[in-house]
Each structure stands twice: as structure tokens, then as C-alpha cells.
Image 1 (spheres, rainbow, N blue to C red):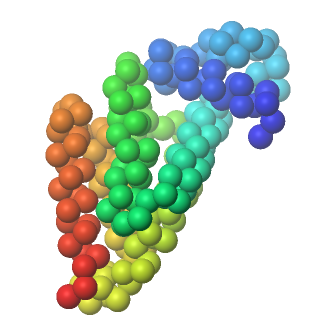
Image 2: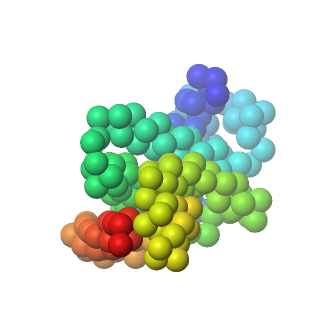
Length: 187
């Protein structure tokens, strides 16, 4: 990704946060990025493409941040906390500012929705790798690292939209973490 694309996507993220996905316009994004609308349209055909690219940028940043922070974490518990903070809590705080955050659940057209599912794959792959050392313990409980990763991510990600407030989110995440740690224990 070149500097111009990064500037456009950072501007789009700001605009989506301020106005919401539905009310944000290509003109708003171009203005925030300091470029003309034709320049914006030369790179992105429509708002759905910008939404998908913005989500991909955010997800990539989360994966990089988590991977880097895990270097100094000594336990799986610490790594789970890092993941939850970077991928869930910060995003929850961010979407609380958005006027139509529920639109993130729906996304745009089906093509965008499929792209967004692919974007989430990087986070699930991180978790799968984290849970792989406990493969035998998980197998004894009828699960696998990839199944637990999918469940953990789907659950924690849904909490971003269902938690009433940050206290409720913390409670939900603590319960999920505790349940996950039990799954990872040897029998």
C-alpha cells in the first residue's frame, strides 16, 4: 500500500467514525484526505470498496500489533489479554463513537461482506497458532486449535456489538477467557 492509499483509508476511517457508514460520502472522504473526488474515484470505485479496504487496513494493524506485543508476553493468558485488548476492547471503544456502528455487522454488498470475512482470517489464524501447543488437551475435549480459535474470535467479536458498556464487555471477555483457559488445560 502506498502513502496515498494509506492517507485515503485513514481519512475514510475518520469520516466513518464521525458520520457513520451510511451518511459518509465519497466527497467527505476526499475532502478529509485532501484530494479531489476524481482522484478518489480513480482508486476506489465506490464507498463499499473503501469500507472493505479500511477494514483490511485496521485488521492488518491489529495483527501486527498483537504479533509484536506477544514477543514480550510469557504466558498464554497474557497473550489472550493482549489479543482481546487490541482486537476487541479498542475496537469496542472506537465503534461506541460511531452513529451507525451496527452497519459494521451488515457491511455493504455481498462482495464486501465476503472480503470482510477474509480480513478476519488473520486474527483467527493468530489464535489458532496460540492454541496449537494445547492440541492434545483440546482433542481430549473434542475440539481443535482451529475450532477453538473460530469460537473464541466469533464470540469475542460479537461482544463488540452486544455489550451494553465497557464494564459489561470486560465481564463477557473475562468469562470467555476463563472458559478458554479451561479448554486449554490438560485433562
